[in-house]
Amino acid sequence: MNRKDKNAFIVIFITIFIDLLGFGIIIPILPDFADTVLRIDKSTIGILIGIYSLMQFVFTPVWGSLSDIYGRKPVLMISLAGNVISYFIAFLVLSGLYPSLILLIVSRAFAGLFSANLSAAQAVVSDITPKESRSKGMGILGAAFGLGFVFGPALGGVLSQNFGYGVPILLSGLFSLTAFILAVTIFKETLPDSVRKQNRHDFKGVTIVNLRAVKDVIRNKKVGVYVIIFFFITFSFANIFGTFVLFAERSEGLALDKEQVGFTLSFLGIVAAVVQLFFIKFFKNKIGEEKSIIYGNILVIAGLTLIPFAHTVPVLLMIIALLGFGNGLNNPMLFGLISTNVSAEEQGSVLGINQSLGSLARFLGPVWGLFIYEYGFIYPFLSGGFVMLLITIFSLRILKKN
Image 1: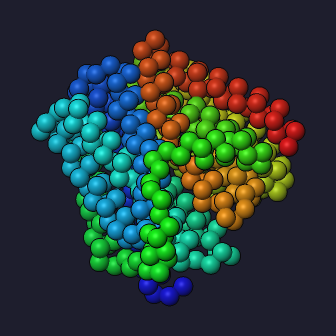
Image 2: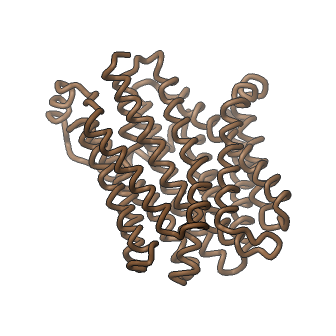
């Protein structure tokens, strides 16, 4: 890899880390602020949390097409500039300068609309790495993704507990501004001009959501079942986005503050990261990918179902460890099965659709979880566990036939 490509890779790694750091920072903050300061109902909090992922679902294909036509650098710069603006708007609300629900929803929608970082980053890795090194490059990107989510909630919890809601959001905006400056000054375009010209010549218009392509992937006998399983696993897990924060802070036995909630969520990320680093190869070689998915699902069922019955911090951490282990196990196995069961020419489109459907699940999960939270704090966790149980039974029956 030459110096130009190395610089491009470094900028992309930093960009993805910062993007997920900002996303992680806001997780322990947003539900608590919406509930205690804005005093909105739980269903609206679900929409507030989920709208980021909904906008990702709708607009990620648009940014992917634009990066093929105009290049990776312009899309990356626009994405990061949009992130800076979205954090600035959120800062106005969370700092108390302009505490408006509408403005906060706009800021989260804006952040989701401009969240082209991951798709642009994956495209850059494809541009600058040979096929035999591509998996390694994607793995390094995955590490940046994981590290951001590990440190983000803890940082958000500590800063909001000690300095108020506005400071962590301001810091996220400054991080994104730093990444924007790096993209402008150091990052060099990785998609050749000849390819961009050809893509512009072949361009037939942007499809926001290609329903036909989604249907084709789901009907694909080799990968459709894995895409369906991934969607429902993501939905079940996303049930606790927002609800976990409210439960942990308001439970009589726990009564965690924002700092403690942040560390607990970071612990979840650490467990999942440890599994992905040290246990995936063992499970894949000794048990197999499909059986590992089942075991991972069982652990997630146990974790989700038991959370509302945790009344002490040590018990909660043991349950969170189960949830993190299961989630760290089943997701990589599903990605591996999807990737190995499609041709090289289909990799981008199939994985892109899988990620888009994951974004849709991350919208529906919080909306459902916080809607049903109104009827009792245990129901988001129990309903998530129940859906996981159903998809595990489905997986057992279907995967046996494959």
